[in-house]
Amino acid sequence: MSDLKIELKNTNIEDKEIMAYKDQVAKIHKELYLNADDEEEFLGWLKLPTDYDKEEFARIKKVAEKVKNDSDVLVVIGIGGSYLGARVVIEAMNSPFVNSIPDDKARNPKIVFVGNNLNPDYINDVINFIGDRDLSINVISKSGTTTEPAIAFRIFREFLENKYGLAEARSRIYVTTDKEKGALKKLSETEGYETFVIPDNVGGRYSVLTAVGLLPIAVAGINIDKLMLGALYAQNKYADDNLKYNDCYKYAVARNILYTRKKNIELLVDYDPRLHYFIEWWKQLYGESEGKNLKGIFPAGVEFTTDLHSMGQYIQEGKRTLFETVLNIEKSRTDIIIKNDEDNLDGLNYLVGKTLDYVNKKAMEATIEAHVDGDVPNILISMEKLDEENLGQLIYFFELACAMSGKILGVNPFNQPGVEAYKKNMFRLLGKPGYENK
Ligand code: PA5
Image (cartoon, rainbow, N blue to C red; front, top):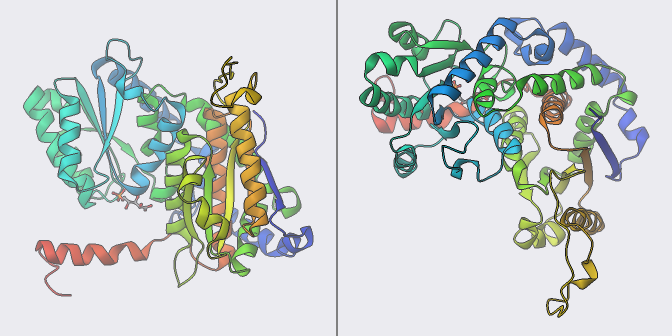
């Protein structure tokens, strides 16, 4: 596995400005590690690549094999941190058309995600997609009370019970939730569902390397050992409290410096549609961790070259509050050589012999140059290729950088008090007992 490469040369930040944060970074680093085992601090993710529950990890693999044998579809029910992590890895490692492969040719069950919205058409579309296929359910909710997954679970549990009868339905439901609290835990005990634990000290958006992410990822046929190995590599690599040698912390510092320069929107950019959900996961991680106390960089995302044809104008010439962080996969998984066309009516013969990945890279270089010229600072994060190990590494990199960045900003990167406000209004409008008054 090779290191992620972090380039700050297009940020217009000098080394000495970064190094001015050296002491603060070292202090935060020590605090993070000192409190890593404290249940109250939500820092369990910090040492997960070494301290994960090995017995449960083995059980995840076993259950994944069972689901592969008895199901064409795994319905994964969850939202936010109980959803995006699994989707990141599954989408990054698969073809976007994996769910269109006929069942008799598919190597793994199709994974469908529900409980991440309240739209009835979406749920009905999923039910139609399942048709008479065999299925299992993995419902994931730390609190066990979140409205969207709770409603979806009620619907799909009934679907499963009608299809298989109570006993078999029970054997096809896997619950990932708190080890002792919550409605889902109670329901699992009553019904006898197999359960997996979301550790107390791991918040939703930091939970991809627990059963939350690992069970669906393993069912999708993706190597979770390699994913953990990648994260472990990053855990070791970024354990240095010396900012000079820690690129992860340099990224955290650089974005805080840009923020002090009124660059308060960060665009995470990819040039590979398989990273679409990586951006969604990253947006939650940074938005929920830093957007509080009237502070925080707004995390947004664009996919290039697609969005150059929709958002490119704004990025180039709109309000100068943006900076970009580009995810660069150095080598695409496959490639296509552009062939000669005698007539050359499309004028593309100047590209003969070049590959599509080469053209994509030149588009990236050209865009970085144009945006930097247009006063959009650029951070470049490169990885050799998109595989399990590099994904594990990248996930851990962004989690640790997020914790450091939030602490530098002066917020608690592990809570999310603001997400309750709309829920209270919604419960009042829906007539939930106990929520009658504003
Ligand atoms: O990061 C978080 O804490 C949130 O996004 C939660 O994961 C999300 O709200 C789902 O919560 P729960 O797992 O309790 O259903």
